[in-house]
Length: 112
Image (cartoon, rainbow, N blue to C red; front, top):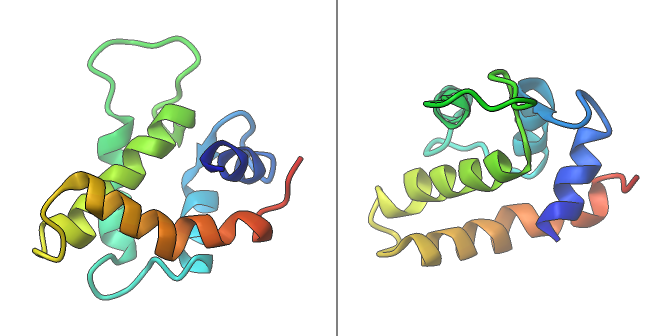
């Protein structure tokens, strides 16, 4: 389902990658943005996810490819649930994030 969500998002913008504007809008639409996860934190996660220690052809430094989309969801889950003590493991945090915010958006993201 994550692949379908990602694909639905990228066709709305910078195909084949997901730009900041589309990602930020998705986070707001999914009600992910709150006092524990504001747009400033999401921007930091976006920047950190895009850091390339080695040059990768076809992987822009200003947008998310598919594996980076998964990585940023893990970063968000960590910040929202592990760092706050609500979850003890990354797995628990990611499952909670996916079930509460990401997977419910599947039907709202236009499939291509």
